[in-house]
Image (cartoon, rainbow, N blue to C red; front, side):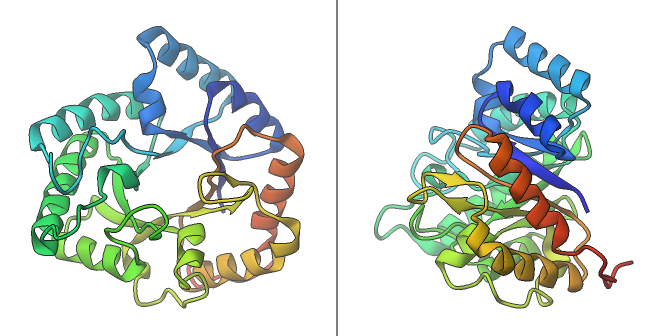
Length: 267
């Protein structure tokens, strides 16, 4: 079982390594905002610490529209091309497509049109990342973030309708908790899931942070249920705050201990 830590700055690579994480996850929009020198320095530091950036979250800024007014396939393709090249240099294996500001629809926007635009966006993105064997993962987001694709059933359905092996889903327990899905059994969608996120917050959905100790048993039960359903992927603790070594280590232990000593269905 691999457990990673989401980072909002390259300076936290050392903290993640010292805390014992197996990998890190950077925001795509953060990686793209770096100068070439800043990016190469990040790659060098990650290599020195032997910390792969196995995943990418925070895929794009709001200017890259996934669905709705302003959807531009050419712009989406060029962004995916550039980010996929940087992802390959960091040894990335999956990229999460969340980015609520890029898929918030105006009132009255046709749902069918939005879904077709999203499918095109996913295909365009998967074509670019697929050159490097990187899987694109659609993420359901809670209504506190956006108004389009809010449930795991919706994201799994979109993925199945596209039908590409390089397009799957990422389960985010934080978003699932907001819509009452965090304790659902995942067997019916497990075939579409290749990655998972988990977090708590420090006062609101814009301050996702490390796991709260008082919720450790709840988190462990949810993670255990996912793996017992046949999940074989990794779990990232996704945060919007700088790495806190003490809290990071405690959160890592909570996730690791969730399946410690248990026989899983895929073993």
